[in-house]
Image (cartoon, rainbow, N blue to C red; front, side, top):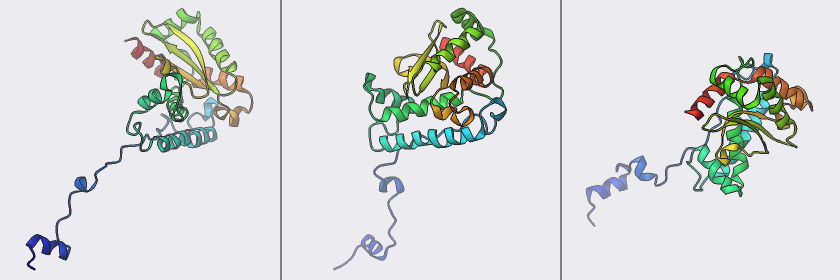
Amino acid sequence: MAFTLAQKKIAAGTAARPSFSRRCAVVPRAAITLKDPPFALDALESKGMSKSTLEYHWGKHHRAYVDNMNKQIAGTELEGKSLEEIVMASWNNGNPTPVFNNAAQVWNHTFFWESMSPNGGGAPSGKLADAINASFGSLDEFKTQFKAAGATQFGSGWSWLVTDKSGKLSIEKTPNAVTPVVEGKTPILTMDVWEHAYYLDFQNRRPDFMTNFVDNLVDWAAVAKRFEAASA
């Protein structure tokens, strides 16, 4: 039997291999990654949040939410979606799927880290300060109400400052992983009141943690940018 040149090359193992794109019928879609905080893990120590807390809270708890979510969405229609899309889809109009808790906690924690700064504390200024005074009467009254939301959230959850398009501010608390985003609201600040957020530094003293957060950790410049973007 006579062999063609192409057949001889295949038999000899010298035939050109198909391109990578042709050999791979399915290209894996990117997973959601763990985003770094906008500061070093020891950068908040002088502000009352220890490196150990960040190592456990961000490095273990937040990482576990990311890893578990990626496992849950692998091979589903949610794989390759943005984090926000995964949160909204898994909320499922108030009937959350198993993916929701991990996805929302990934979103919430990233938002929490980006609400704090080594230069945090002090007071807001400009339009945000005006809005806080208009909505709550004073910064001190805002702090009182914001901490009260965290204190009265039974068990785990979050305290939020949210805004609408008119610039009116309000305070909400949510249980477990729930975020105001799923209700179409725009958060501009959050405080984590899960025990893992404060137990290494404050043990069971949630009120002390919350006071330290609002007095020393809030990045008012970041909150102001969110407020301006929401009001634009």
